[in-house]
Length: 316
Image (cartoon, rainbow, N blue to C red; front, side, top):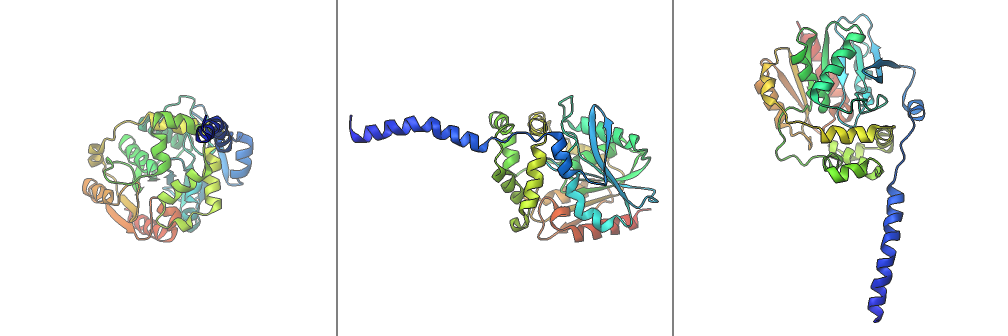
């Protein structure tokens, strides 16, 4: 046996060991509910039993407000995504936000079904439980898609819409988010339920921001640890595997005042979609934020807050 063949044989023997070491290094155990709630629930957190889940939400701001602002976060996010925005407008508005099923402290649905219809039914049930008769409904990304679908299904309850980088139209040339791409691949997605590199979460957030330097360790920790909450990773996989085709033709049926907000540098849902929404929703208006990506209320909260307050002041 030649020296070179001996080296190759040793390398092949070492390969399984190296793969095992890599797997152990990437393995991430789920975080028990009690621990994750201790870290991310606070004095303003509330919980209700709804549709077989213990739903985490917050109800803050002006209690005299007749038309609360209800905010819905996007995929793999949580109600914390609205923190900076809430700080800027809670003196004027009552603001309600929740962790959607599959995410945050709410966690997985026992149905393991995360279609648009499921989320619309969830939002409707949530608002009924809180006794909200009419509201302004806002949402980012997936939350925006849920918001406009809810406005179509529950026309008497929704006074106005605020859509931030919302889903609705088929994607074309967008670069996308690395984490979301992997979660959509069946074989890879199942691995992500146990092997979740923190670096993947950081890269996904950097893809979602215009300025990756704004993605700090605290932000990465929050997204990463909430993803590791018991059941959330499998729920996220279920969501991606169960996605259905979009129905953009339904957007033309929206008949409530609508504000469309978009980050100019959104690489997940191109800013051109803001124009599609304004074209299809009669009387709607759009505001585009420079130096902002897919999550403008996190990255550029000040101009987002000003645009929202201006829109609300103009409502009949």
